[in-house]
Length: 336
Image (cartoon, rainbow, N blue to C red; front, side, top):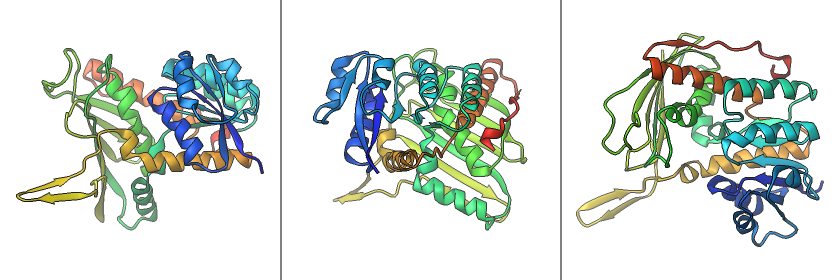
């Protein structure tokens, strides 16, 4: 079986890291093309990779020699067009979230994929590939702690990027907790409430940071998320599951502890690419392995659509201060 030729769309922070990962970490794949409107940036990401085409646009990248699959890491507004182009060509595609700018676009993609007769898209909710998350999922599925009652989630960033808005705390950052909660509990989110404490003085003017998001689920559980994107001290992602028979907690950062005279220091991750490096490695390896066998696994376009719907409900809850119910379209048979 030959190597899977992958076109990587986007050569920014995440795209360049995925190029590195495909070239140096993942087995069974090669980078066949890198595309970015900034061709110098694309060329830098592809530097040293043999027979890798550098392109400025989507179409020429997908039509480059040896492209068997596509990884979408371009800015979010470009994702929908990229996915539609992959569906038209029958190419398996791993797309970073969100797969569309809004829920209507996400539903259009679900409908488009169903016309292909099978799954082609995997959405990049990488926490499903994190070892700690997987252990917690196994524990909850096994029933040893009894029925889950609550999930307490913490999501902190060192600082927010320029242009980050109050809505983006939910539709960009908390979207990971949306997918993780659905996956861990095996339940749908039915309503969202957002509470706003006083903003931190570290937040840019006008940014409502932090926020406290509460999800209600179809199984009667509650999920709360502290989202704090200008903590200034760490990138931290933690989850505690509280069940009828006990609790389990992940994300305690059991890293190297350094002791010097009179002090004790512990390494603290400053970036998601550090905290979830192993998860990204496993995500891409699993995707490559499946694509080489003609399969698509992992989070589906339906999961991407649901995340978008819940995120939009969350943004409305943020803006109105009210509890907002979640309403989903009928689930196509393709997604089980």
